[in-house]
Image (tube, rainbow, N blue to C red):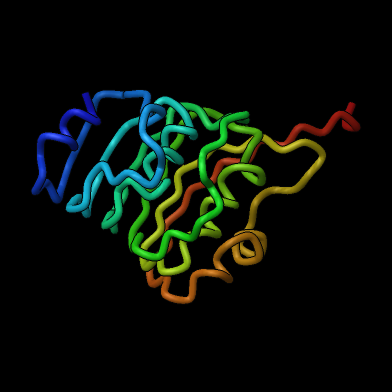
Length: 166
């Protein structure tokens, strides 16, 4: 349904899609543009891979993305998650379920957003034998790569698993 809306709405610039969906453009190469006009997208998706599909280059002019991800888990897919995202200026990323994959999935995505001006993160993270995510770690992980960032709102709930405590 999502791909159909984009394909028939040639001048669409702002889309709010509240149904929780699974994105798949697997039948199109990532070089095919799905929308050349969409600049703002608010969407609820099932997995982190769905988020990566949306940011693989098919939405060429996307500058604002508000995304709620149900599950951030590991993946074996070959989605392009290396290219920088220079046009993205504003990101709100929310996930209510706990994830173990902050360092492996979320941080690499945020490092690709060099021109971000506004960032909002609402996350729940599980860490093994580690520390809470603090301002210093956020700075070192990705904020240092965002020189244009003017506004950063975050709530990161960290659950630490420490087997050495009895």
